[in-house]
Amino acid sequence: MHMTIAGAVHHGMKEMEVWMQTFAPNSGTPIHRHECEEVFITLKGHGTLYLSRSRELDAPGEPEEFQIYPNATFTIPVDSVHQVRNTNQGEDLQVVVTISRPPMKSFIYKEWSTPHAEAVYEPREWDKEDKLSSASQQCKEPEAEDDVMADIAKLLGRSIEDIVVSDEIR
Image (cartoon, rainbow, N blue to C red; front, side):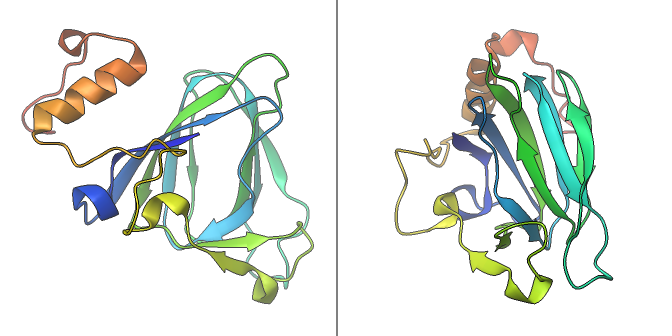
């Protein structure tokens, strides 16, 4: 499940976008790459990040594997082929994701041996301007900044008073 907390298409963000993604057991992203950086913060659950850093080969090749666990932070460099999977049988994997240069344009690989030239561009459902997907629970444009903070507090299961953000950061 995907939810855009603050994004380009529906919130007018220019330089970054913030999402919350929840992956059920045995699910995850497709193998993909994009021309933006990503920062993931794990809220709950466990999983595996598969990452191929090599763009010098014709195809991504065998990826490195990194364990994902609560409170872990990991980054994905520009154009790095990667996949995030919930490899835990018992609980959802939930992450907050920040991307640069929205909206993200993803190129999907059938498998790790798929040549880079054969990766297929696939627009993300939540980046389409013509509809708000109820399936992805796309946020509507907030009326005020405090509404965004209230939404984040609700998502994290906390009160807005528990979330401290300085005016310099806002």
